[in-house]
Image (cartoon, rainbow, N blue to C red; front, side, top):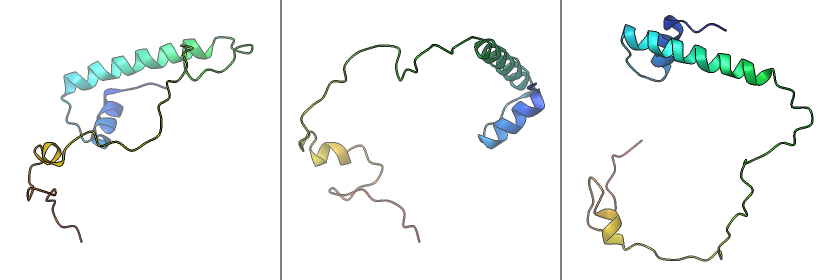
Amino acid sequence: MSITPERVAQIAKLARLELDDEKQRLFAGQFEDILKYMDTLNGLDTAGTEPLYSPVEQPTPLREDKAEKRFERDDIVSNAPETDGQFFIVPKIV
């Protein structure tokens, strides 16, 4: 698959990004490099390889499943754009 600047423009439009012609050419080259590397990986023999979910074998730390109050309401609503002092104020959606 060949990635052209026009294809990058289509992808950028879907992502709602505005890219100038120079960036489109730059990203097209970078996408091409990524796809070439994926072709290299596809050429490897992985028949005897066990699937992994992580390359690092570490146990998953577990914690007791209990409810805790970590923050105070005032601290949480203090970062909100609009609040009545106790709750967030959001636009009405019908």
